[in-house]
Image 1 (cartoon, rainbow, N blue to C red):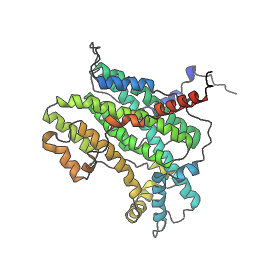
Image 2: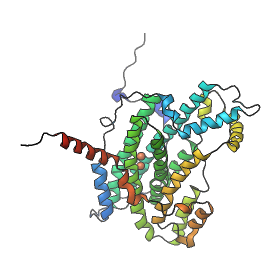
Image 3: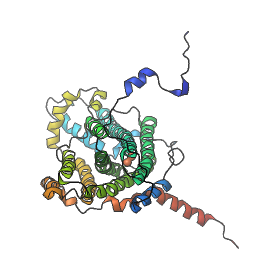
Image 4: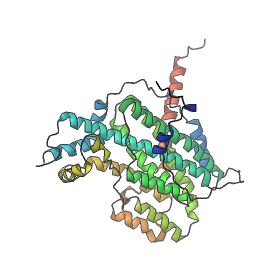
Amino acid sequence: MTTVEPRHYGLPDDAVIQGSIRIVTDHAPRIFTWQYDREGDRLVTLYNKAMSSQWNSVTELDWAAEVDPERLVATSQQSQGLVSLARTAKELPGSPFNNWNEAEFSQLGIESFKATLSQFMHGEQGAMMVAAKIVETAPWIDAKYYASTQTTDEARHTEVFAKYLHTKLGDAYPMNPYLDGHITALLEDSRWDIAYLGMQIVIESLALASFGIMLHETEEPLLRKLLRYVMANEARHVAFGVLSLSEYYEDLTEPELKDRQEFLAENTVRNRDRTTTPEIWERLGMNFEVAAPALHEAAAKTDMSVFKNFQKGFNAKLVPNVRKLGLLDANNGHLRKLWDEAGLMKWEFADDTASDYESYDAVAADRAANQQTERSNEPEHA
Ligand SMILES: [Fe+2]
Ligand SMILES: [Fe+2]
């Protein structure tokens, strides 16, 4: 019998590490600053709030809760959207879904939900790395301090989504190519503000929209609390981006601002294909190439409004935040024109996250409610 020596520190096997890592080369210079004076009042306030609203992923979430995956996904529009697409595809002559039964549709709902949570998890790891990049590359001490708290927040977010998937639902899915390409580009870019713009403004707005939809739909208590607490942090992260970049962009030239406008156009109107996870079909024993034509045909016959909710939530966050950065109107309104043609400008004056982030602070709200309960339970003094 062969005995295997335990490895030190519980590190995974070398082969596992080699098979699961990817190397990204960052071209941005690291910046030390010797200027320790606190300058941005609003950023200092945000940093102080970030410190006081930290939460503990082990003690503040009830991980012992039982989760029934079928019940969990029954209310999920996103998962059920894909299921109803497959149901429509089943009716098409010669469709690969012709033989599908209820058990398979139910499994599709669960797999679709897992794929969504997997993208949340990978996106959170990307956010952790981009926040760490901002610590290293931003030129102001207040931004470095704030991004340090964000790095910790994103570590906790990655950890809780990974734990929820692993302990309640099963195997995760790989990162989808859109998210992968977008985050890799942010990590590689030599301009530190592009990492900010891409993460704090685009991906964080996207995350707020996705988490908001899931929170609205689910009744599962553990996932609800997890999402409320994650969103409390994310709203502050968007506010951090808006506060920092609006000052920085005041001093950029029109050609430099054009680059930033083009970056936003690229990630919105020119690229809307964010949600494909072909591996879902493989797990259900079907090749994506085989499933795709029937799904496309079904999409033309199905009410796709469930997918539009996400786009609405995303734009309602993104557009007002970008307005605050001054990027709509630079270069004679270059981005305003592009977004107007795409129908996005109706969101220009929706609530912007630089001012509404406190309304998301579920952590502070829960703590205030607990204190209130404790006070009312105290015996009255004679
Ligand atoms: Fe996050
Ligand atoms: Fe975040």
